[in-house]
Length: 469
Image 1 (tube, one colour):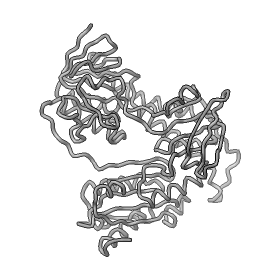
Image 2 (cartoon, helix red, strand yellow):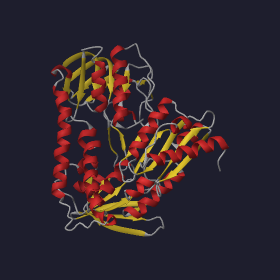
Image 3 (tube, helix red, strand yellow):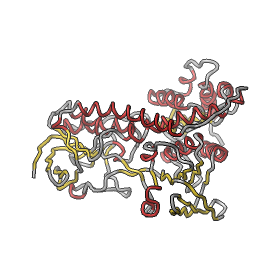
Image 4 (cartoon, helix red, strand yellow):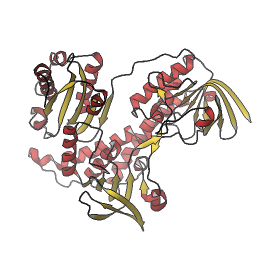
């Protein structure tokens, strides 16, 4: 059996693995990246980029559908599903190509294709053919869609995950979407706007990442008027009938219901892709969620010479966080045993539905769990000037501040293009701004940011006046 000796072995060449490789290589050239699938990150192949391409097409169709409110009549509106998906795949492949160009520039000796598993601490076996003895190891294996047991066997190729959507050559007539997380919400709305008959299934009344009861209620009310949506669906049981999927479920009134679709899209979350690594042979324990306990400021697992980064750690499964994880793990593995802590950036999470959802800093639930004493300010987009001009006056936001010193702690936002407001707030939170400092910044007129000013003014009053009901 062939043997390779390295200082650092990185398992996985996704966003975290590539970032780890770049960082580790500043400390040592004795390293190898082990990848068991095609190169090209989750973001580029099946995540951020192709999903936003599909959403952009859907937004274009929606603009045409709603042009009459501005006195503009559009005749002959038609969605060419083949053309839509051809552009999605073409541009997706372009983004993947940039990733492949980067990997192509790595020395051949730094790349190893195959599936890795632990044989012992510091020892990996790749494809049962190569032993890799590594002084330090970084696990960056990413995550994979979570599918209920038995669905694959029952539905065959009529069961799909988000990865499959972006290989379509045309749009189907109908899709059942099970799961109201980010993936389910984004794809359900995009497909619906492109003329696909969609039903979105949620196992609870919660949809999306927002946790404040007020913002949650706004999202639920919007969903119920936006597309066919079954909240609190129980006993979801799909089965195959010829070339169709029949979904049976009990609705929130306990009535038995059934509907037929071309496909069922399982969008009930993703789980760390750690199966098959044989972590027990490396002496690595797992928590109740099946993930190794680790320090997010060093990415180190316990007191071992093993680090974990990206979606594999199930901490913040977002591209920019995966890249940060990889950089921290790469530097610490590269200069080990000189392991250094790094303060993480302010959390930022965005859902690209329309209206968008975002959390900047701490969520409402996180603040409550921490026992923080905080106040909030609120603003609705219903009568916000610029939002109303655009005909996109839906949603609201809440901004949270510490009663002790007025510092901004977090915000939950639901409204038009709140990706931009969320960035402004995340930057302010990371700087340590108070509500009053943020209010001293310029606000142009008429812009959506004036809605943020309204929320900040409400927060400043709440901090000044005392506890809220």
